[in-house]
Length: 240
Ligand SMILES: [Fe+2]
Ligand SMILES: [Fe+2]
Image (cartoon, rainbow, N blue to C red; front, side):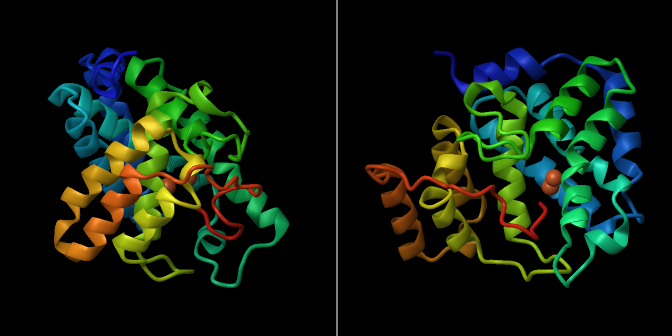
């Protein structure tokens, strides 16, 4: 089986300047209009780029993957700011509008036929899919494009550890511990463990020694039978 880094290189190593320019324009629409989403997209793309380098991807492939991941929420341009910023919980209709951002984003990015734009569209459409089939369209396992599997990890981590109008930022430790326990089945195990190791290094100034020890123990000793999540993730009302 090829390593994730080799696979990222196979998919993302191509130089595509027209595709990159298109993605920067699409992402730029969020700036000022949906500012916290824009900031989240930049951070999530940066996490994906650094994680790809950690996995051994080339600089070019990591840059391309990071840019594509940074466009994962462009579909939120189609969701009103009032709904995105709501602190009162969402009605079922509003929740459906928020969920639709994945497909709206895919449609916005498929306007271009450039290869990197197509890869970014795949990520936008699939970044809420979960390895165990509990995502928006209930795809599972390797049916989820690799870029979207990586986007899901970075998206969940950044969403939980940053301030939103409807929740305060959580510290890195409980978020990573949760990803290794209750949320573990949502992620590709071949990516989750390297992602946590990457985050331990990337966030070392935010983690106490005992927290690093506990995370390493959880990486090395996964639960014998991971708890099965029976409800869609993320929780209702939370929209990464
Ligand atoms: Fe997101
Ligand atoms: Fe999203």
